[in-house]
Amino acid sequence: MLASSAIFRRQQFLIRSLGGHSSNIHRERMQAIKCVSGSALEADGQSILRAIVPTFDPFRYKGQAGKVAVIGGCREYTGAPYFAAISALKIGADLSHVFCTKDAAGVIKSYSPELIVHPVLEESYNIRDDEKSIISSKVLADVAKWMERFDCLVVGPGLGRDPFLLDCVSEIMKHARQLNIPIVVDGDGLFLVTNNLDLVSGYPLAVLTPNVNEYKRLVEKVLDCEINDQDAPEQLLSLARRVGGITILRKGKCDIISDGETVHVVSVFGSPRRCGGQGDILSGSVAIFSSWARQQNLATGDNLRGSPSNPMVVGSIAASTLLRKAASTAFGKKKRATLTTDIIECLGISLEEICPAS
Ligand SMILES: NC(=O)C1=CN([C@@H]2O[C@H](COP(=O)(O)OP(=O)(O)OC[C@H]3O[C@@H](n4cnc5c(N)ncnc54)[C@H](OP(=O)(O)O)[C@@H]3O)[C@@H](O)[C@H]2O)[C@@H](O)CC1
Ligand SMILES: Nc1ncnc2c1ncn2[C@@H]1O[C@H](COP(=O)(O)OP(=O)(O)OP(=O)(O)O)[C@@H](O)[C@H]1O
Ligand SMILES: [Mg+2]
Image (cartoon, rainbow, N blue to C red):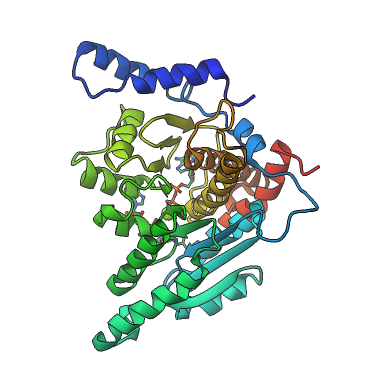
């Protein structure tokens, strides 16, 4: 049974209690939220993982376990899109694509023959002003012809901040949204979205995965205030509501997840190493887990019993739980030498310990 129902009802009550009043009662409720952070708000990530990971079935064909695409990878950053895309595969996706710049494509291909790499994005330095309009249309067409096949896009790992490239990515996001394709936004995708909130506002299939820095920019832009660590769940709830009920996974010592309706915390200990790339593993993981949660909802026409009703929230909890377990296992083996690739190598065994393949 997922997420002990008494705890879940209690947290639903606490969240419903957040009404934006400034009364003493409201203050007390805020205190209650603070106190339950890490207890009643703690998600039962392992049960959620067991509920959404598909069983092996000889009648399933390639693609049914998930097809994801990462939009990212430029001259500077080739590791981030690789980490996101390979993590989705290692968890169990059937196909993982990367749409990146021409400079990055050869490098990313050389990391892994498993990834399908499309060298379609362009940066300003490579094109003339009079070419921009035609190239922008071509970039969108090159991605759009694949789009309907994907169960989820991850926008942003290693994308860079070139203005022309980001304009093209905005068009890609608008197209994905028209087709109702879920979008996980991370890294430089968050830079883009924070300055263009309409790209995700009111889209229930969007998940933002900000780190401390990215969250600060988002809070300042949307709520026009500073980060409030005392009332972190409450602030995240307000933020997710303000952006129209999208899901936000705030990364940090505890990962906090909200869609403006519920708040969940994943605080199981991961690793003390803070090497770059762990957030990229997370974004690729959210993509595949939320796809599986969505598939289950669509197949059964129902929510997973006892778990949050929003598949994007379910996928975020699952991803955070697995990443932390894999990071802990990798650190147990490699200690100070633990790197992101070591954590990726531990994704499979960590998932196996929670939900065995047979
Ligand atoms: N191998 C690769 O290819 C990887 C590529 N990556 C890609 O890089 C791109 C940019 O992503 P990002 O994470 O470096 O950008 P952002 O969050 O703006 O940080 C920038 C700077 O802000 C600071 N800072 C950070 N945290 C802070 C804190 N808590 N509190 C205070 N300050 C803090 C810190 O700078 P410092 O102050 O230490 O000099 C940090 O360096 C993006 O595309 C991403 O996907 C990564 O995925 C890694 C692996
Ligand atoms: N202080 C911390 N203690 C424990 N775990 C943490 C801490 N900060 C982050 N994490 C974990 O590391 C994961 C990645 O978060 P992080 O803040 O490093 O993302 P990021 O900065 O976007 O990473 P990347 O280098 O890939 O861009 C999160 O899911 C979280 O579980
Ligand atoms: Mg990041």
